[in-house]
Amino acid sequence: MAPVDAVWQEMRVRRRKGSVSEWEGRAVDCEDSVKDEIGLSMDDEQYKEDGSARSEEAKEVQGEASRSYHESRVQDDDAIDYIRGPRYWAIVFVIAIMFFLTTIDTTIAATSLVAITDDLGGFEMASWILTSYLLGYVAVIVILAKLSDIFGRKTVTIGCIIVFTLFSAGCAAAQTLTQLIILRAFQGVGGGGSFALSSILLIESVPPEKYADAVTKNGVAIILALVLGPMLGGAISEHTTWRWIFLINIPIGAFVTVLALVGIPNGFPYQGRPEPRHQPGTGGIVWGKIDLPGTALILLATLSFTACFQEAESRFSWDSAYVITLLVASAVLWGALMVWERYVTLAMGAPVAVTNFQLPQRFELINGLSNFNAGVRIIPFGVAFAFGTMLSGKLASKLRVPGIYLILLGALLQVAGYALLGTLSPSKAIQPGIYGYQVMAGIGCSFSYSNLIMLVAFTAEKRDGDEAVALGAANQFRAMGAAIGLAIVTSVFNGYVGSRFSQLGITVPVTTLATRHRSFLPPSLEGDIRNILSEGYNLQMLTLCAFGAAQVPAALLMWRRKQVVVA
Image 1 (cartoon, rainbow, N blue to C red):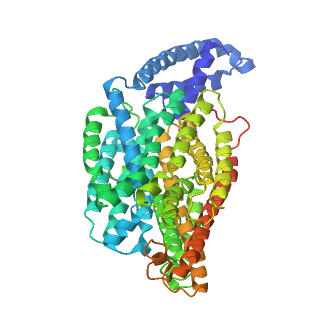
Image 2: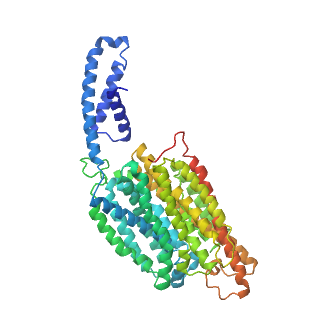
Image 3: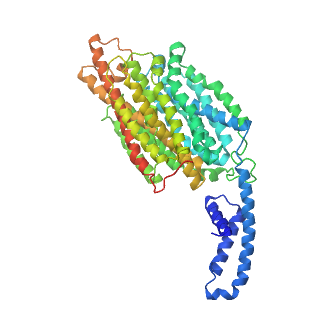
């Protein structure tokens, strides 16, 4: 291909991406029009007479357009001049701290549920402490990602951090469990937005060839949250009031707000560009760019489905009007969502959320451990997640292993790990094998999660430059998967354990027996109760096998002849 043809070919590609100047676009149109008129090969007889004159016209247009093209390339190079120095490190710290805070708030409460419900009551609604937080995530992630395109990354990021911090204070001041659940939902709105914007800042702060390395390094903050969350929750609830699990967010949130205000440039990541690609809008222009119907359908469908499975066999029977109504509403809403969206982003949130929420409970109720020691016992899962994140990053970036292969491997490891976790005995003594099973499941989860984020960022950047919304959608469906997964395993546990308890003649609600406060029962039933609870937890782990297996056909939908390599 001649040099000038190569220039025009690249200009057309850039025009499809929307990254050309106004003059360059007009030049492409003009050049194409002239070529259509005089013929590319000049072989047609009807053009031979005036071909020479029109060729001169074409050359003039090509010359001016080529100059415009090269000038725009210089402007684009300036526009993507990535930040270095102190401001870069300020952005890195903002990203890392918000990854840590928003993730730890999904795990720190897992080992504090008994302490919270002892104080506020309502153990039957304890799982809503996590579910409401995840539903807050689901509600706003894509909207906030799009708003950051319109109003700027800096403005929306700071707003999300402030919302998260203020409602953390509200959670600490809650006087009833209902208040706490509602405030947790609004805290989730800030947390989900902060996590989504941090993901976007991460991808936009480095060039595409460094995506894998950046995701791997910043994944350390998420890993620390997964490892430390249950331990901190247990230690705080044992040695002081549970309210400190929310109070500690306030000074950290205030600090990171100031850091973001100072460190993130105005107009990021288009700072210094005369005409940013995304101009602020108002009124109908703004809302016209946001898929409000799709977002509302996602939230309502997830809420009705989650509420149905959370409450079935807990406070309501499956044949109650409450559960049936929610189930029917959920089916209708999911159908409407499929029609509206036509496709669904792959979600892999359930295994990680359920593991961090349910395994500590098993250690407490079956093995008789304290809150803190229960949190310590799931460290292998967090460490394995860390190792897997780093390993998958190296495999993707250094060895150029396609991400889809790593996602499939991760899914298979999850199936194997959770299948083994579903075979644990009801013995009070801890089986050594449980730590190895956690490692297998943790590596599997990390392979799936980290490669999903890298693939979304990389393919979105290649296709249309709209990686912000793509990353927001990926995080939204991850949170949605976590909420739905927790609801399903809770329903499985309550249904199985409740029916087995009724066979023993126990009429006390499952949520009362699934605590350490069972002193009113005859000692002769203690062994039977432990066996039943252990089998219930095993069923939850086997349910996660289904989530892992479902990732295989979902990943195969991304199969292509030439696989995407994140490098």
